[in-house]
Length: 542
Ligand code: NAD
Image (cartoon, rainbow, N blue to C red; front, side):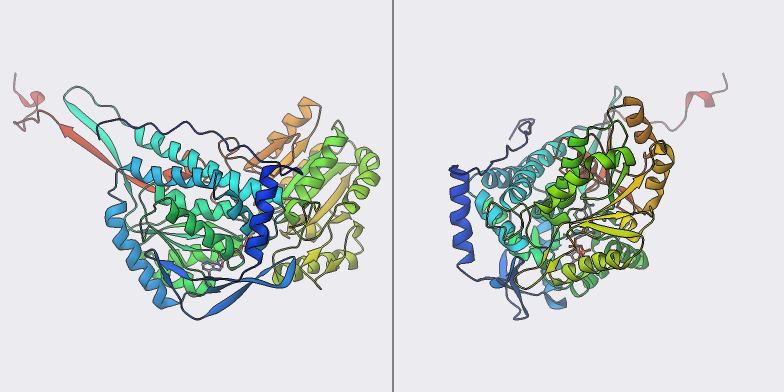
């Protein structure tokens, strides 16, 4: 085809509100009922084929822990070998396919997801990961549609980046895929992240072996089906659920391993990075390592702040999706004068948050993902209960009789280095440190140094000079910094997402910077009239 392709200019997918009586709500409820009425068996998908290993794990609903909605087969070393062979075969055609054809597959996936597949992915995310309708919509539908539209557009912009060509020659960049496969490893908490860790390298011509988180295999399986419906060729993305170590180790051992696209905890990422470093001699080149990891995200209030906006940011920022967002606010620094104004109402609001099954649309919160998360979060709450340096102002109750429910907890501490001010908890727990009015600058320094992470953070101040001071003092404390807004809810194309320090490589998911990591450019120079004499003019006597 003789054309210079231009990807449709991306726009963010509008959110449906699921208000009573809306068509979206009706469709979503009927899809939820349909999915929960059956138990689906989820195979591995290798080379487009279903592979069953007989090593089975049950999938339950976190807010109704005895209800099994699926069973998935776990991969082992034999299936890893098959997947690596499939990825290598598929690369021969996928990597050479014209870029507009590759991009079309994911643009189509995006439009299918915005339309007929929307409620399938939303319902699967609500059941498998206990997100309420709104949290599922912003994740499984809108953010993932946005990833596909925007990444297609960024691919075009990368390919259009070309060097200068002076008269007589033509220089260009050939944006090759990496010379090997990419290993995508996704976390449980965002369906869209799973859909992007896999697709971003694939759009750039790579083939992918994907290990979804065990707690998100349910929605992951529907992602696989979505890509197949969009025409993704067999073997381009191969899905291998299973234990991290069992699946991950043989993949990272392969000489064809050429990239890691990871989102998850800092500990797991650090372990993988060390293994990769130890394996360097085995590989054909230096693998691209991209990882977005943990956070200890802050809200910092100044005396001049709008107190109503601050309260809402704390409630939404800390407790939406049960605090299980890498960007969730989990520590606040509040001047005493402001604290005195907001404390009672904040506590009342938190105590009033409605918690229950995600399928009941009146609930703001639901259960945390699994028993391990429940035990871990409860451990932090129990620690705070027992400490003389902390008081629990709201929440503190944990009940796993029906599902893994943790009441939204608000802790006040007198110690800015208290354990829950420093460590990622990944649950509905906010700790407040109240500082004396006038100690703004020194408290900013405490905030900067309290935790090893640097993912998101927010300052609340009406005083412009104070906001500037905070932005400057906290320059390296957050990769996504908010002024008078909660630190969650980044939108693709609007707030490219990622942090540094222990929060990751900051390659900004859903941006051109991330897409750049999945290509290894070759510079080509063609000389139209090459010289035919080796001697230069300066070599002449006269
Ligand atoms: P996790 O680290 O427990 O698991 C992430 C993935 O790594 C899972 O698929 C897991 O099975 C896999 N894994 C574990 N050990 C492995 C190994 N040895 N080899 C290969 N893979 C292995 O994280 P999680 O509980 O699923 O997600 C929560 C974490 O993710 C939190 O720390 C959160 O902050 C982080 N997160 C970060 C971002 C971000 O953009 N920075 C976004 C979402 C989640």
